[in-house]
Amino acid sequence: MSTTRESPEPVELLRTALGVIAEYAPQATELGRVFADAGFELALVGGPVRDAFLGKASVDLDFATSARPEETERLLAAWGDAHWDMGREFGTIGARRGDVIVEVTTYRTEAYDSSSRKPEVVYGDSLDGDLSRRDFTVNAMALRLPDLVFVDPFGGLNDLADRILRTPASPEQSFDDDPLRMMRAVRFAAQLGVDVEPGVLAAMTAMAGRIEIVSAERVQAELVKLLMAPAPRRGLELMVYAGLAEHVLPELPNLQLTIDEHHRHKDVYEHTLTVLDQAIDLETSPDGPVPGPDLVLRLAAIMHDIGKPDTRRMEPGGGVSFHHHEIVGAKMTTKRMKALRFDKATTQAVSKLVALHLRFHGYGDAAWTDSAVRRYVADAGDQLERLHRLTRADCTTRNKRKAARLSHAYDDLENRIAALAEEEELNAIRPDLDGNAIMEILGIGPGRQVGAAYKHMLALRMERGPLPEDEARRELLSWWESQQG
Image 1 (cartoon, rainbow, N blue to C red):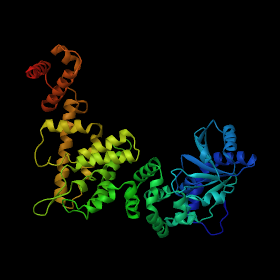
Image 2 (image 1 turned 135 degrees about the vertical axis):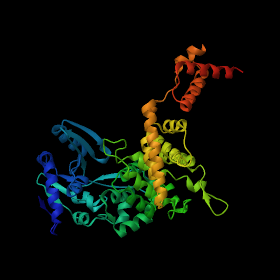
Image 3 (image 1 turned 120 degrees about the vertical axis):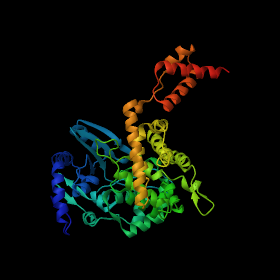
Image 4 (image 1 turned 90 degrees about the vertical axis):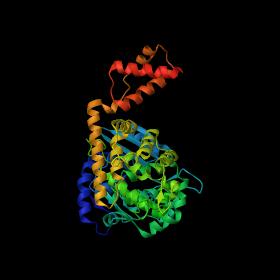
C-alpha cells in the first residue's frame, strides 16, 4: 500500500491497517477495476478506512466515486447479486455481492441553508474535494482503488494516533454545513475515546443551537450510537459542556441544578452519570439476560431521576424531598423519547423502568409479603432483569455499610423471586379461573362483568398464590354475590 503523503505515518497503525485491509482487498480491488475500466475513479472512504487503522473490520464498505448515480447503478447492477437505490438524491447506490455489502456515493459537497432540515447536495469532481467536506480528519482518509493508494490530505492518521478530533475545514464552516456533526463529535468522543480539539469545542459551544434545524430522527440515531459506545459518559459530559444537551436532552443538564437528598454527590447529574457507569458494569455477556450494550437499560439509567427538579421540596429542618419523582420522571421520559422519535416499544420499556426504579426501596426495612413480591414481578413484566440492574446501579452511596445492606437486601429479594418463580411459574401468573371458566360458573356472557371478575381473581392470585379449583370457584361466587347488592 503506497501513500500520497510525504510525512511519516505512525508505523504501528499502518501495520494494523494492512492486516485489516487485506480482508477488504479482493472485493474492493475488483470493484475498483470495474469502475476504472469504465473510466471512473473509486476509493474506499470514511469509517472502513478509519476502523482499519484501529484494527476493526467494517461490516459494510463505503466508497466514493467520480461516477454519477445513474452510472454507478449501471456498474453495480453488473457487479453485484443485487443493487438498490439508497438515496439517489444524495448520490448513493447500494449493492450486495455474496456477503459483501457496499455503498457507493458520488463525490459531493453538501450544506444547509439557515432554515433547512435537509442538506443540499452538489456533486464534486475530485476525491480530495470530497474528503474536504467530510466531518473530521479521521474520517477524511481514503484508499484509491484498485491500486490501494492511501490518501490523507488533512493528517487524519496522525490525528487518529494522537486521539484528537479536528475538522478538515474550519469547524465553524463544518458545523454550519451540517450541524449534526456536533452530535457526531460527542459520539466519537464516546466511541473512539478521542479528545475534541479546543477550536472545534469552541465552535460547538457557540453553535450548539443550530442542532435544532436537524431532524429528530437523525439526532436520535447519533444519540443511540453514543449510548451504545464503550464510554457513553464521556460523550454525555461533552454534550452537556458544549450546550448541545440543552437542545437534544435538556433533562440531563437540568439535573445539575438539583442536589440529591442524601448529599452524596455535587448534584443529581453526577449521581446519574455514576448510575449509568454502574448499570453498564451490570450488563451481561451475549448469553446472559441483559446482553451489553443494552440501550433500554442505559436510557433508563440516564432518565431515572429526571423528575427530581420538578418535584424538589424543602422540608422542615433543612431537608429536601422528591416525592413521586419516579412518576413525574416516567411521564417526562415518554415525552422526551417521543420528541426524539424513539419507537413505541423502547419508549414504553424505558418509561416503565423509570416509574419502577424506587419500588424496591423499603424492602430492607420492612419484610414484603409474597403478594408484594408477586406484584413487583408482575409490574416489571419483561423488564424485570433490567429493573434488577437499574435498582442495584442506583445505589451510589459511599457508606460501605449501607451499600452492603442494600446489596444484601436485593440479593434476598432476588432469591425470593427465584423461589416463588420455581413454585408458581411467576413469570406467567394468571388467575386460577380464566374468562371462559368465569362465564360458565357465573352463567354470563362476554362483557365488562367478566373483565371485573377476572381482575378480582388475578388480585386474589397475587395475594394468596395458587388456589384449588373448588376454593377459587367459592371465592368467585362470593365476590359475585357481593356485586349484586
